[in-house]
Image 1: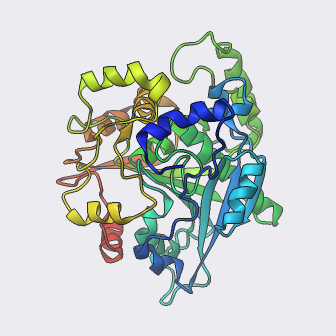
Image 2 (image 1 turned 180 degrees about the horizontal axis):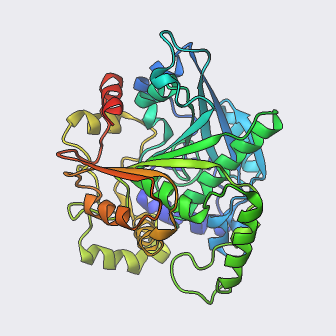
Length: 413
């Protein structure tokens, strides 16, 4: 199982289907990789507790259509983990598909008291990472939120970090909001099973994580009443086209009335969302034509430079990224690029369905995603409790490279 060998990554799925090869590690070597040294300050802090969890989802091969597998939120197993080799084997026995996440809390009130009057106490903050990253890339910023009282939940999205899948290969963008919903559902179930009340949740994401949050909010709209939600979903389901009859990216989605657990989303904070690609990072149209021609047999092929080199003018950002073994260091894969493009198109079609209190933030010098697209999206959001701020001169990475810098930026935002 060579890591990031393009030829092998293209051939491997065919060998698996023919029964000639079995994948030994569904995370392709990422599960047991060492922690990035700059993250040790958070992992080793005696005042902060953290736990690793993973949820097993049904294998995509178990569904009659791959789309159903991408869209599923069915949890077949949930467990605490310690990141051991034995857990890889146990995961394979359950189908070899899982999503990892971690939960972070202060063990007691910080010295000097809760920041901001403890505005986050009793609330959850979910941090959703971007393209080529994984959850703990937020490590420099987590202490700030913990000291404000939040319990912080950090998922590794499918194909990233210690979740399963070829690194940074997304055959469908639906994998992202579906995985997020499965994680939040698991958190709620754990809380209720231990006698805790369901908490209000604030969602935050950057770049691809920003798209994930936005699409999650329209795909799983919050409601103050489970009864009203069921009635609204049933009425909406009656208007949906039958499978295979509709048009567009998302017409095969499972009926909303089948959702049994709904998260109490109180608001969202979205940075540099992937709603429109900047002209600096959009591949040439000929590259896109080639991608569409080969995606069905070479979807894992790295083909476009995309955002590489366009995320920051601070050299420490790229340096830290390439020294982190859990990040994806290759070019944008064919299937991933086309899936994310389709996701942006679908989000643009349905932007008015995002109806929660929200704050959007973008940098005017973003060379990866366009702040103009974020401005247009903002104007279409129906909730009256909405804000947007364009930071003059900021690049795509709006948070700094060190913990000290990160705290300063967090306070200014």
